[in-house]
Amino acid sequence: MLTIGQLAAAAGVTVRTVRHYHHVGLLPEPERDASGYRRYSAQAAVDLIRIRTLADAGVPLARIDALLHAEPTEFAAAITDIDAELQRRIDRITESRRRIAALASGEGIVLPPEVVAILRRMRALGISEQRIRVERDAWILARALDPHSMARRIRDKNAGFDDPETIRLYLACDQAVDWDPSDPRLDRLIDDLDAWEIAYGRDRGRPDGLELVFSRIVEASPAWQRVVEALAHRARQRRQRAGG
Image (tube, rainbow, N blue to C red; front, side, top):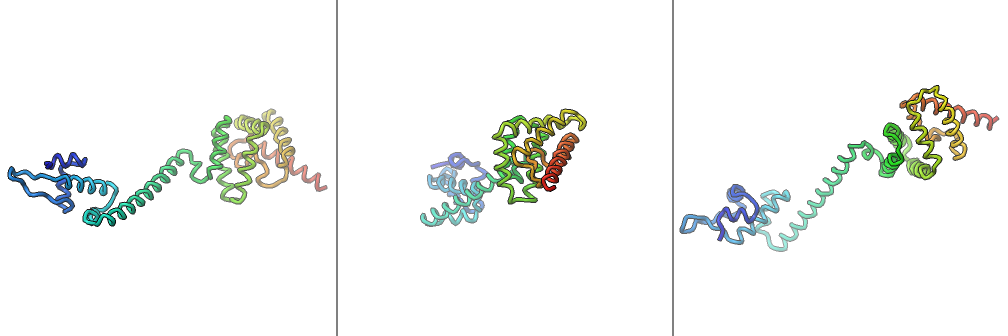
């Protein structure tokens, strides 16, 4: 037979908790023995562990009382239901944790995993965070304005990062962010980008035709603005010559 302190220790609760369960009627309080002490049986320890476990799982005390008096098959079925509900709670918490973690970068909140992987790939190549933020914003806008093009964009972007020349030009554009718009080095960069546009079949005049330099870029750098404007001008001239 167990004292109340021994019973509480066996179940991993406090004596105060045991007395609370007595008060609400979940755990019967035994009569005092000849020495004036209340002694608890092994069954009381089993019941207390069941009460504590169910309560820790979030089962209301009223339902716990019903379960303690249920038939074994009914009790087993109820435990299965409780376990399923716990799994649903775990799944919700896991998803919440994933979304909370995504807040740190701001990328996984509105962008699919394939695009987040592209941004990670850019970081691994040594592209600056400023350029990556511009890229991220461009993806967010593209997804909002033309979601059906996302799969093609993702394929094209990954293919580009498999090409050494594309990577070289990405890094060159990245380095040019703080250049003065009149810097003569921009002339060589514009020539290289223009040649890339022609060689890779991107010289078609469509709004998303410049895969290396998104329109969003011009807001971040006067040098990039000059690059974008120069490339657009050359593309228009070629189309005019072709049409004439």
